[in-house]
Length: 180
Image 1 (cartoon, rainbow, N blue to C red):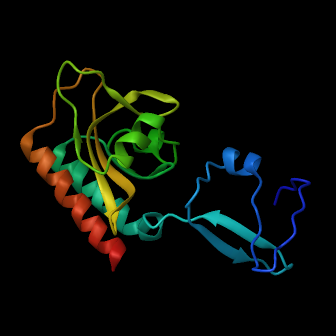
Image 2: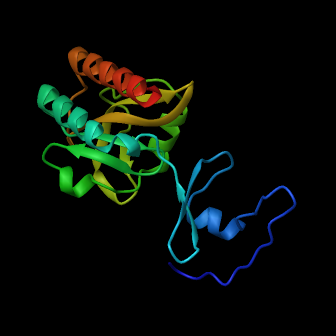
């Protein structure tokens, strides 16, 4: 654990305020879910909760299957980073932080499909050669918790109708698995 030097009191309702600086650095927004852990030395640890991260093995299997069917790199992201990746760029993409563009596409809670001639959407903050071809949000009780995304090559064509349908189906199945 890393010490911050910040001390806070718990109020009479058991609440504690996480300082703005820490929330900003850790990208914790209002309404974010935090998972609470304890350690053997009496420490309390807060970790951002990702319902998609809970399905780690299943999510990787879905990404692999969709990548094989479409022939493209496929990633599954939560609202912060790439949780699972499949295809030739797997190692390069896994655990990378998603771009503000990708966050915005997820928050719209509707499918995005790249069309030839429009500006490409960058998947990750620090990777400028990974572009989103199809973004299908994964919804949990109406809230977007992440997305399954098929990438297009740098000079890529628009996704096919069958690719779009495959991603839509995978997003729906992942949504159902998270609900279960």
